[in-house]
Image 1: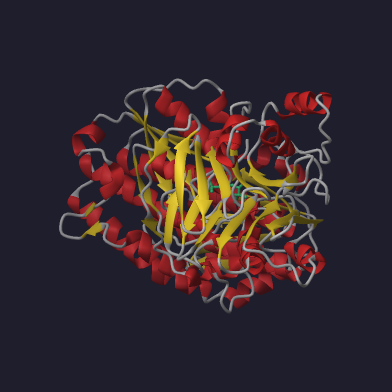
Image 2: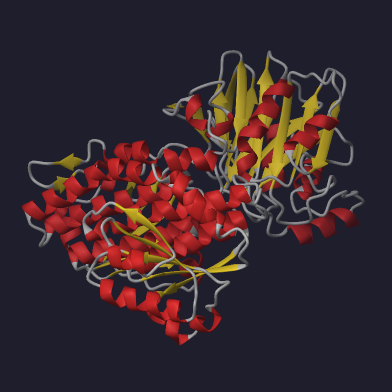
Length: 607
Ligand code: G6P
């Protein structure tokens, strides 16, 4: 969601904060601001729009040894200069940046205004600055703690006070805060992406923790002022993993690095001798897994669609009833948690509020939940009973690509693991694992068709609407394909199970509404082909994603993208890749902001 950076140390804070903001811009990007403490004053600069606009507004000679900065994705109040963070108290001596939502913000705002405070923004965050202003503890940490006892909701926040030199104070509840440990300098951010250029030593704050950060070190306490002990972890990703390199967009980079990402997701997890998958982090024995009678996958957005495709894989290989549900729906419908159900939370960032809420709901009711998570050390990863890391590497583009394919690779490994505990034979296990190992080269083959796919994508650019269809796991691919196209090209795209076409959407099929058909050569092939005929009979243009050598589909389509043959249960992985390229090329041709599409954020840490 929004991004936070803070710095205290011997260097000039301003360029460090701005560079950090650029690295976090993918998380939220409708306004930005910076506050620094100079020798004599606290200076705050804010601007609606992207970070470049903020930079252009900054006085050239602005220099300071400490500061905080923020890039915002609006929840309360429009993206204006006033609503941008940092927010200051009435004295102008204290500035604060905040991620999260203060649920009792409206009541606190009314109370503060009645007590004579002047609130300058429409945000819930600003109340925090005024609450700290009113707090009567001896030091800044104490005032922050006191203020936070008044607050319901989530926060990751950093405070800068003119009267408390050489220190910034941070606090966390439900919104990530990570401290970067340097040499005579300290950093703080909402995401390690902002820190990796400066340090690889980080400390993650826990919920209800407050940190006092000085240039020479830091200390932490609970909200009740009890000191806490923290461990320093090492960031394994290199700074280059967060860079765009020679690619025109992060999304391009992330699509094209999928072969290596999949290799990493598989590394060390394949036992060719016994045809089993090694998943060390599950924390569940074979005996525990034998008791599993049902599996439910939970996630939001692309993670949910990956869950839908993954549910097909698991059910097919294990015959355990499996389904997927949006985590956001699940958490609020007072779900029945069964002790022999295994819950699997899928999340690239590991910080999505709704997915985290679902994890907590399951655990609160005594259920077991595994995480399939990309961000190592993230909240979801830490709160699950066990899990599988995707190892996809940092994903920066808002539209998820490599995390989707790596999720499916991890779920396939889980399915094989569970299957081998049940009816899947060693030879079936070996065959499936060998097919997984072929995926990186097969993805390369698809990526090699980039030019041809661009040509096909150009044909979509003047369309208002598109359908995506598929059956079974292919329907999940269709959902993900439609999602990609709409989120980055802004062309309206809808996905339907191919079998549902004649129950409604066929009414809208016409020569101006193309359909992207996911059409693997599997046991539903003939049925899928008849769906194509239904579309063709209405003169609807068809782009088919089919298997190499499938001449009948090629003949029945206007355009066809061919993917290599794999085990049918893995088709959804390969068939997704052309849909990513279609959406990407279409968005580029339309001049869209591919990496940062309008109104969206990479990691939605609010409900
Ligand atoms: C946001 C992003 C989506 C993403 C979803 C879940 O909505 O825009 O691209 O799929 O969150 O994110 P997660 O980090 O939990 O996978």
